[in-house]
Image (tube, rainbow, N blue to C red; front, top):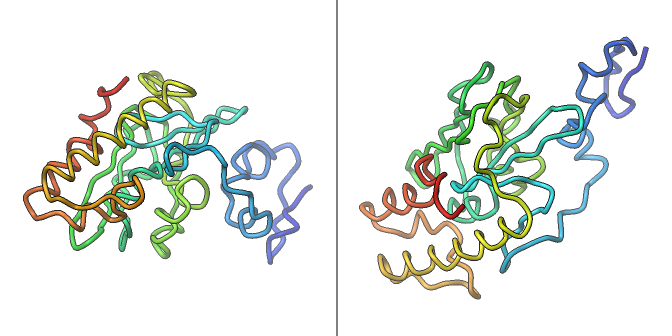
Length: 224
């Protein structure tokens, strides 16, 4: 038998079933207890002030995917989308299990925004902790703010970007959003970055246009 020493109440798990537990694979890095005790350092990789961990794959609508050695995978929103949202008050998952394109409805600034990972995953769970503390979605998008957990399916990694290609794409996205915001509302950039919570700063007509251009599933074919 084995158990997690960090848990306040020890739960015994047969050693033969360790791979079924989050502790027995790469998923432990997204465990609330692990994050609280280990305090993993934030990745130093960034592009013009936007955090962009090198070990992840990125979709063109600003969601990321990480695939562990055992085939488990996690997905969430990247720091670019986190900054555009600014803050999130509520999170609702469209599906929690099954073969789907994972989706969640985010309430931010009195508006609802649907974020969708553009490729199918075999969902095994969602980060339900975020429903009680949605601020972690944008404060810690690559760790405690993950959204979806599952396993790869056919097409899960299609058109995702990594490495130098992903960095070049992010540089292009930063230029595009600054140009879009300046044309639409004249909102000033903050030290080269677009204003945090930019979706809240735009007028009612400009918000959905900007979100659709950069963050909708239809953006997933751009910039690759």
